[in-house]
Image (tube, rainbow, N blue to C red):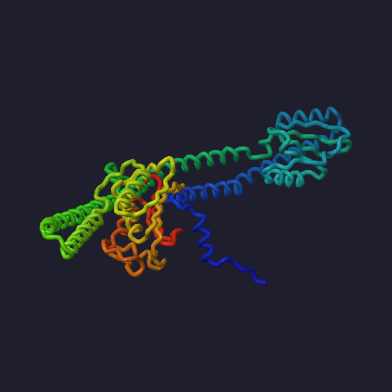
Length: 451
């Protein structure tokens, strides 16, 4: 049966998941990985082409000396001949030779971690010596123990380790490891400096998106990063000018409209009461309410600064304002309060709009606040008719009134939910609509921690 291999797309997904997600990690990988591969390649070439060859040559030389010592002893196996051979070996070859009578060769041997050392010495001894032999390269740190079977015993040879192994390999690898660590440290410093500029730009953009000013932010870093920072500052200035112009325009229109509306209200106050007069007063009140909502929507953040506050107290204020209009509001708050840092006016408008929207479409309204790991969650439930799930996002569109799915609200202009979502997103959160346990609609306002 043919084997099945993962599709190329699966391989791409696997590689993508395995790579670092941050720019810092990816840049570090791009710089360090080639250096590490180069060091590995150099180490491989060193061991394969140099260290292994030198070790083999040293083993061959040592095997030749051991073979000479064995032949010399076998030519004259007397104690005097052994002493003469041992003396020559000590003076000329730095070998320590001893004869162990009536001793067999050891049966076990510890293997060297570097298999090339044992294999090289074994091949060299097998090529030069016909008698049975045994050796150990791990028992003594500075010596190699070699034993050869002879008539009546064993000839033991202790040779300095450098006679059989190229000991400079460890020093070379140590220098390579030290150089790799130094290069890695330098790379980390330079990469961190470059990434910090991007992180500060991202933080400045996030602060601006949440309505917080960052006067200390200045473009720095690589040329491309400075260009992006300058473009961001120019965009920020244009957006701020647009917001100021929109707010000034709406404030001017509101002021110009309030003057004739005030005159009309005074004239109606001096007019004899009657059904027509009361109807005109209601129309004037509706027009003033519409102007207030237009101005609140146009003002948006309005340059308001973030302050420390208690969201619990803010919820109670918004609920109290709805109660004064005749609504029944139930509020559930944590006992220890809800400390938060944000724009108080924007959040109060958002809560007031959500609560007034719920009280306008339901007889029972419940407001709750809970702390989560990700921040604060506020819910506003009502027992009204609700909104179908497929039309809930449509309800957040400015000037959109879903009168066919909710009760008629003569005072509304379709800006309450839009203002609430705009304020929540200005703090890095959001507002969404769900089914309420009361049977109507639930508005969920979530704010991140440390906004």
